Length: 457
Image (cartoon, rainbow, N blue to C red; front, side, top):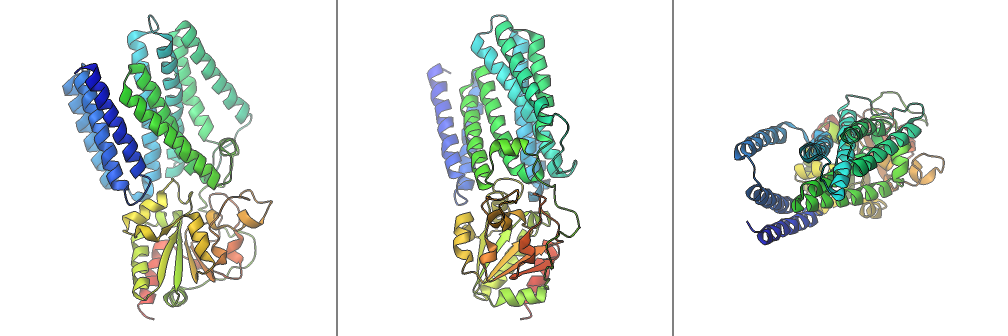
């Protein structure tokens, strides 16, 4: 294959990546966008394999193993575990980039390697190793293997800064001297830094962390692409890195936080799974029968899904309730906060799995525009994203964070197992507001009972 042909085919693959990325921005075109991007990746892989001198047996074995693992994951992993799966993918992407750099360094060493290659080798191993162990910690937090609360320790920030400076200094040493020990020491320090950097971050900030780690995995891949002079890897990695940074910026904006505050703020109270009641007054409870009357005779119901809905895997039950309401002439809409759940787009994916019509999904601004004329706001397992303290209490840690203003609806019904705080670890005055009723239940059971009650009215 001539160099010109290879360049043109890589360019076609890059165009497919960009078109696919563009179409992934809308639920209506996401599936076709995914297919277009996958075709682009297939083209890039084929061009690389044809052009490079590789063992087709090893490549075939790798494809077979990957196909088996991918199929098993696609069938067995629950939608609620998607954030953990994405965190694992980010980590393995970073590890792969670091291994590519390590293998190339071992192959050619520093002797005769140009400066630009040494620079990209160092960056690839530094960023890739941080991404790998940081993602493993994020996975462990999301999976509940370790607590979601921030884990802080003395001299946390100075130690992390010292490790970062040591890694950067050793990378510079590699470029200047080509010392092998400095290269491997860079990787070792980066592995430790990835762990220590993510451990102090609380569960409330995991959506931002996942977006940032996704960006880092892309940047590591782009650096690895420069190491082996593969244009498709450079372009693909750069696109992932750039889109991840944009998403990280959007997520921090949606939380009214800075990235530095997310990384170093040690904010959040874990998974909110405790059963203790929060201070703040008396909450009024309701029953599925009373809720059925409220929503069954309403004109408009806005559903606000949260992680509680995902945990109970109640998206299909929600769809059944919505269908029952729509048969009665009730208009049902869904308010999606940008950081709802544990991963960007988590709620959209869950509702799409239950075939919720795309035109019923409203973003933050669209939801707030209709809540003032909404009869019932039904909050399912969401907490911090509907906390009015973010709007009304300057002393609240989440003050300034844009929220779904469900308290503007005529009636708010919160489905929740207890009055325990959410990921942010702070009380929610919404639970005790005059227009709020609490239905203490698992989301799946509450929706099942609600659907049964709707059949009786």
